[in-house]
Image (cartoon, rainbow, N blue to C red; front, side):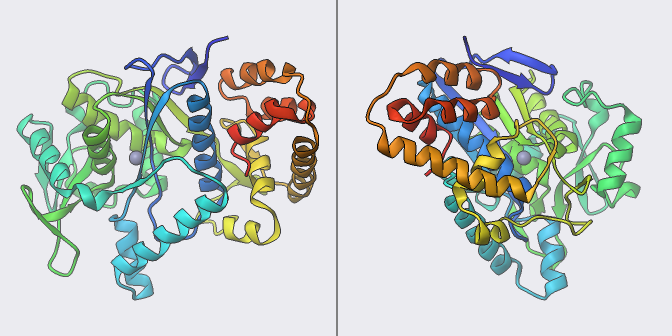
Length: 378
Ligand SMILES: [Zn+2]
């Protein structure tokens, strides 16, 4: 069987064929480091780490880029609220995030890219879009004019009404008054004197979130890539806005062949979110459970499913992973029978729950050891 991956845009599993031979370009939207890593982050980044490991096992040369959004309105807000200097805040939480990922044995991406390292490129991108007549200046900011991008919203296929509802719910745009229509988004902000700013071709200012990812993709991989990854809440507006920028630049689209979105983890039937204050923190789980047990539970739910964490599952996972470890250590023999079934499971849109069953049934040997490390257990 050939590898098939789901594409959110086409809403189906499609054969995975990279744009450039055996090289896979993958971009996964990273964290905004002003708070601790929660289970949703752990789930998303563990999945894309596992996908990279599997692609590498399949003989692909994986070019995985993940950003760190180290300048953003949320960071400035948190810095104000806690009376801390924003750079210190970013440095502290970035380091903790990377440390948390290491503990979960997340070894992809090989390095993280900071948005602030691309200021010149971002300003040039905004300038280019202005010259193309796709942006307008209003108030303190420069906005993308979504009315000029005819296919706006093609990934989610949301209606105008749904988009406005989501934008309002997520408070993405506090400055409707300055915009031509609610879907338009801020690409550049002219900083006031007390706010952080960079001197660029766009003058003194700072970038908006969507231009950050679009620019990093365009600079390091794109404008067209094989896989755009992230949590399902990033599909709109973030990936739609990234598409508006990148497809305008390339004059083509879609910018990603596969949009891969991970499902939400619920708590008591509700979405985990900062605003509801019901986040499960990874650092708390790591105090009580091994990284392997946490990883087992994350992979025992298909990446697109919406699920709820059950603490009993973590205890059981700990026993299961230890049993597999013991089997790998003690068994010299290897029937090799499981490997084919493992490939079948993983080729079917990364069916990790099935792959874990195959691993448990393999009962040790070299094949089991290979499955174990491909799934990212340490
Ligand atoms: Zn992004």
